[in-house]
Amino acid sequence: SQQGEEDPQALSIQEGENATMNCSYKTSINNLQWYRQNSGRGLVHLILIRSNEREKHSGRLRVTLDTSKKSSSLLITASRAADTASYFCATDASGYSTLTFGKGTMLLVSP
Amino acid sequence: EAQVTQNPRYLITVTGKKLTVTCSQNMNHEYMSWYRQDPGLGLRQIYYSMNVEVTDKGDVPEGYKVSRKEKRNFPLILESPSPNQTSLYFCASSLSLLRSTGELFFGEGSRLTVL
Image (cartoon, rainbow over all chains, first blue to last red; front, top):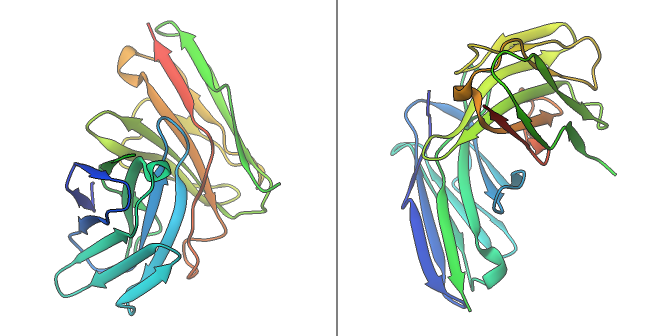
């Protein structure tokens, strides 16, 4: 079952702009994670936010979590061409020992 | 270097010819999992393993088998591959999803084509 759904499906911006991606999910979670995938490569973990956290930062990344709305957002500030990739949210639903991924947002950052 | 290694990276095979995709991790992780990635469908979990000799079905287990005889290895077996199993496969491992880290480490993927 697809737990998380990212929005938008695709996003095209210029270098230097901020990129915001959203993730909605359906059931209670232990934590939510964001991953990045360069074309055809393995996914790389970016950041994890626990259900009792509301915001987390890592370098140019800012993640928020609103458990009442069952949603999260990933903000990449001052985007670079090297940020071009697909971004996935993944949820670790409460009571389940598995991580479920959304379909991803494809980000294109043009120089 | 901490890594998850999958082999083969690319494979073209024919319907019905049994194949195994190997996965090995050197991080002493308890949790391992297989995903397939298809255009428009995202990543879907095939099987996962919480520890040695413990495996469970994911969302799309039909046509696949796994085993976990050793902590470091988690092979994916396609007993009789069919064209609908043409996909990009990823193995991933984690210290433990039950702990607060829960970060998954992914292999580089195995692109399988079944003719």
